[in-house]
Image (tube, rainbow, N blue to C red; front, side, top):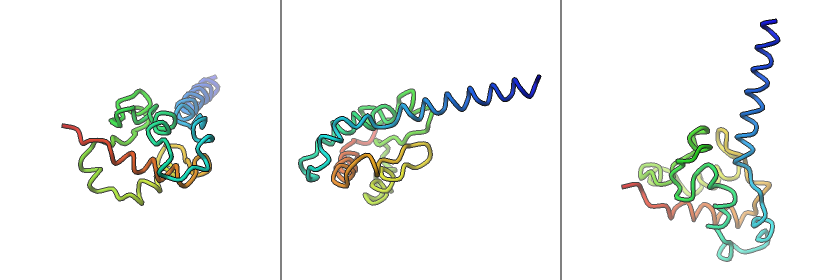
Amino acid sequence: MKNGIALSCLLIAFAGLSLLVAGCASSSTLAAQQAGYPKDKVDAPGLFTENCATCHGRDGRARTFHGRLLGAQNFTDARWQTNTSDDEIIRAIKTGPKLMPAFQKKLSTAEIEALAAYVRTFKPAQ
């Protein structure tokens, strides 16, 4: 009986975690519309809102339910902004570090590069 209860709890926990991670996944409406756009024509703030704000917050501080739970990066952290290269940001968007979903198959190269540039616009926290 105890093994059955433990298995049920484990399945419920796994289902809950799956839903949380899915909450960070792209809905891709804007991404699909802009797939063929060059980087300078991509609506990066719109893509960020659509794909990233659930965890990272509209202000980039990651002070959201999902962000706190999953350990999302605070883009206003001055040390992170200084110590993280553009290539590292692009790689993170493509491959999804930790529990972050990968966007390489969901966003075009131009969209990923535009998002990386947009992440640089977040001002360090004061």
